[in-house]
Image (cartoon, rainbow, N blue to C red; front, side, top):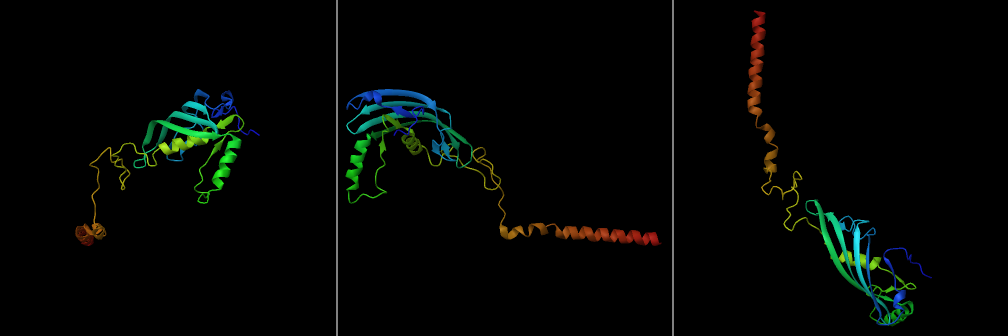
Length: 214
């Protein structure tokens, strides 16, 4: 039973290939990018932004070989200074979508390998009827092409840990460093003068009181 929605722009029909090995067709499509096409909270293709696809579909003995290129605009945030990061991305990908019966034979062969476990088994994709879903393959290709730690410029200096100022805007930015061992004494520097003024004011008040008594 076909579970794919043929109205989904990332679902493609291979009916015209007719399972004839060697037959080929090219497909160009411009569509809105789906959600989650990138690295969450880091960088990616904005949802519903323009996504251009160029595909070549080739019928082979075991299925349909899909070779393609995707072009999109990506947006993110610099990991050093938190400024917006934008770039144009172009990625290439290739994946074989197995016919259901070919996929079963492939799984039977690989299951017999003694040194194959669940972690090392390669993920395979299969056709559902005449349709295949490109989204998981496209997502993997985009994620692998994106930087894990995007920066606005290679020599970005980041933010000042004291006040949060962007250091690339002011490379000479700095704060006077105070030795923490002397920080507690800073409040006492004006104490002697303050005491003198306090005594002087006290003497003045006492003198005025004496004059009033006389």
